[in-house]
Amino acid sequence: MSLETDGRELSISKRIKTHFTNPEVLPEFVLELGEGETCTVCHGVLRNAFQLCCGHHICENDINIIFGEKEEDTCHIPGCQIKFSKNSVFPDACKRREISKLSVYCSYKDLGCQEKLPWNGLSKHMATCRFQGKHCDKCGQAVLLSELEEHMSKTCEYRETQCFYCLENISMKDIENHQSSVCRKVPLNCPNECGVQGMPREQMNDHLIQCPLKKTVCPFSKHGCTFEGTKDQLDIHKKDMISLHLDMTMKRSSQQHESLFLELKTTMDKVIRENARIPELIEENERLQKETQANKISIQEMKKFLASNGEKVIQTGRLLEDKASVETVDKLKKEVITMKDTVLATNQRVTNIEHRGGVQAGRSGGGNSKEIENVEKQVGLLDIRLCELDLRLQLQETINFDGVLMWKIREYNRRKREAVSGKTLSLYSQPFYTSRYGYKLCGRVYLNGDGAGKGLFLSFFLVVMRGDFDALLPWPFQLPVTLKLLDQNGTNQHVAEQFLPNATSNSFQKPTTEMNVACGVPCFAHHSKLETDTYLKDDTIFLRVVVDCTNARTSF
Image 1 (cartoon, rainbow, N blue to C red):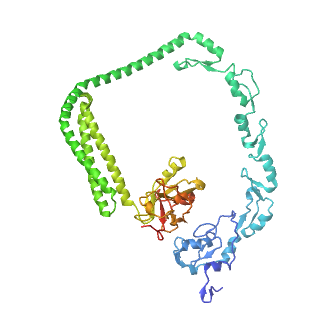
Image 2: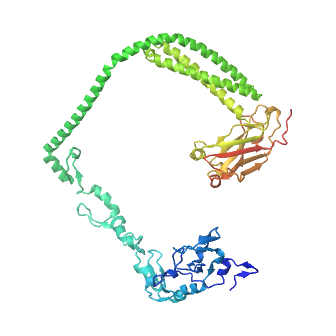
Image 3: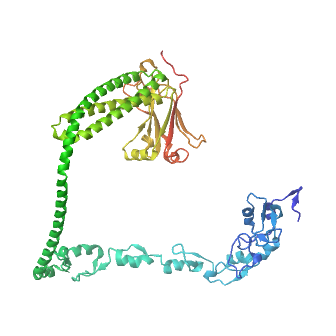
């Protein structure tokens, strides 16, 4: 047969269709397969054989495995090593017929069929085989079809039967264990042999509590007595064993006394060691008293120094209130850094003075302690003022005046757990503006959803805040808003929602408090979509608010 059509070679896949193929069912062969009947690649039975140029054979399914992206390969038989290409491999119909005629067992051999027949006749035989069967759905045992019903009703160990006592349906495999230890209706005899018989298991516990023959341990068991018996036997035992119980009690008391004596001795030794240190501590106290006197002058100088620094902080605060230019911000940053260094140095000096004068402060009536306490208060106020200036400076540096908010939320999983538990329901972003003298806005997000999105979605809202220039702006707020959850894979699969503010909504009127009621999208992003690598990476998400300021109007 020619392998060319219109001057081009047929592909291997097309050539396969023109040749005889082996049966689909893989059986158990009667004889062990020989070298010419197994694949040189997978070493299993040669199925739909293809011949190599060296004469060896491989299975049809192994062709793509050995070639992959290659055009050539080498025969896998040791000692052969002959190279061949895809075009040189061809289906061997004779070998396929030869393999199909190999003697095999019927697939129902385990059920009793001893038939041996050619592989290519197996499917036809199995269709009429009298040993056809299937596996039991409950126990998995292979059963003839003709015997399956009887197996399911009489012999399967997992078939259900009704408990004679409680009438519950239990599998035959478990019925014995059920009746011996589980069934609440099984009649039992009292284990104390008090004469009660045939009592249901569910009532036996109550009986054992009141049983006249129940066993009770001796009250002196904690002292070492091992007796156990009925109430009458216990009464006799306590009368007969008074002297033994007294000996046990005395022995236990003696052991406790020895233990307490050792503990007391250890405590006394510790007290003696501490008393030996008293003269040393007195000497150290006297030395610190002298140092405290010398520190009074240093404290006075420090007060003056703090007063001058406090004035600098006040002046810096006034300058920060004027946030008109970038040059001012840079200058204030340098002053804040200098002020931080000064406060840290001052705190260190106060700490040193406290360390040296701590003992004296407790013994000299508290005079220096009050002065140090005043200094600490001044340093604390200075720290608070400095933190406020630092926060205002950070806001000044990060504030945006082009109507765009880029919001990075770290520690997403922890914050979401807090939202689910009700600890922190929502988060607010830093403020941003539509222009330098425009509307003041911020974002608000509910990580566990709000309203219709609660528990399933991330809810995203815009909040109109009270700004410095509201009196000069047109109201209500009417600029188009776009909310986005940003894709972190670079494929631009952002989740976005756009809306135009409702002129009648109170959320977009001129604010009369610090911020209006938030308005946005309760069902913004489903958790199953948000919490994938596309949007959540390194436990961080990015949200973005864009206000279209193209048609923004002002009255100035």
